[in-house]
Each structure stands twice: as structure tokens, then as C-alpha cells.
Length: 81
Picture 1 (cartoon, rainbow, N blue to C red):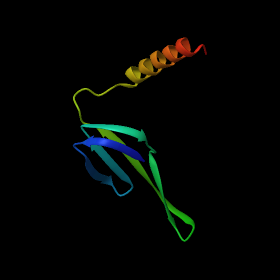
Picture 2: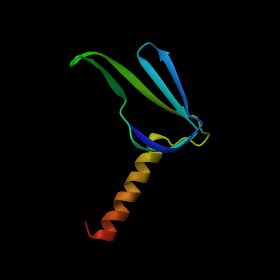
Picture 3: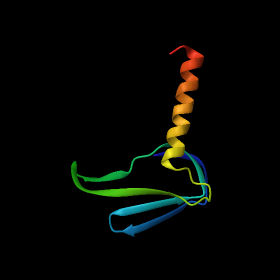
Picture 4: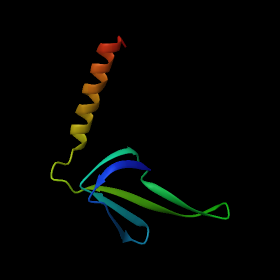
């Protein structure tokens, strides 16, 4: 996973198989919500990874969908797609 400009980073195991990554702000370029535990070429387990935005201005799923639609429409109008 890749990110930069991270502020207020906190890592916490919420149970033996779940890692919670909290932050106030960050630019996240890539995120996967799990990590496999592989030993000697064999998958022996899987860990869940949860991101938690602790800022007071958290975007909702609806906000992200509206942003995506706006960006997509703007891009299509500008580039003739």
C-alpha cells in the first residue's frame, strides 16, 4: 500500500487478525484491505486491514461517488469521450 503526506498515523491491532490504521489526513494512492501470511510458499493466514479517517471532515461514500462522477463528466467533456 502506498501513501504520503500522512498526519496523525496510529496503528492498532483490534484483534489477532485485524490491523486498524488511523490517520487525520493522508494522500492514499493504493490500498488493499487484507494481507496474506505466506510461509514457505504456503498461505497460512489472512489479516484484515481497516483504514480509519479520524479527521472531522470525513468524506462519505456518497461524497466520493459525486466526486468521481464530476471528474468523469469533466474529463469526458474536455477530451471528447
